[in-house]
Figure (spheres, rainbow, N blue to C red):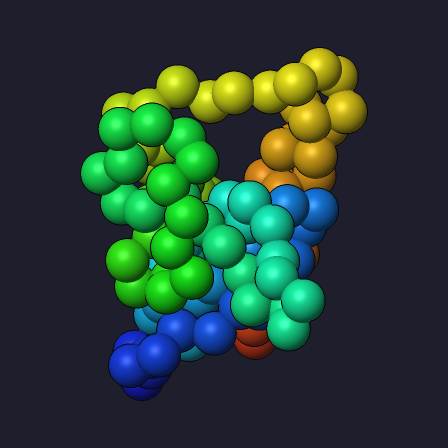
Amino acid sequence: MSVQEFAEPQIVRDVGDYEIVVTEQRSHWLGFKVYKVLGKDENGTRAYNREGYTSSPDFVDDRAAAQVMLSGSIKWDGCSDITIDDEPLHFCGRSDMQEFADLLLAIYGVASDLIPSYEGG
């Protein structure tokens, strides 16, 4: 079974203000992390909340130092495990909630794109 781990994980999909990053890829399984993008500067550099922040926003532009909003894995058959940090999810209305729902569905799209044997619908 081939395992591909990424020294510098890359964004594989943007969904509104979220980015999905694949952290590990096997022939039948993906590991991923999701980050919330708070904004971008004039050069397009993304800003995130710093891991362990106590007051938002606490901007950091280095993803390695940023808060992971959720992480998990998804398999070839569509089964997934998702861990949400012990932080409250904040939505400013219905459109923010829809964007989050779109994010969860996009994780399945990433799996279908990257797992050759994907059958999870």
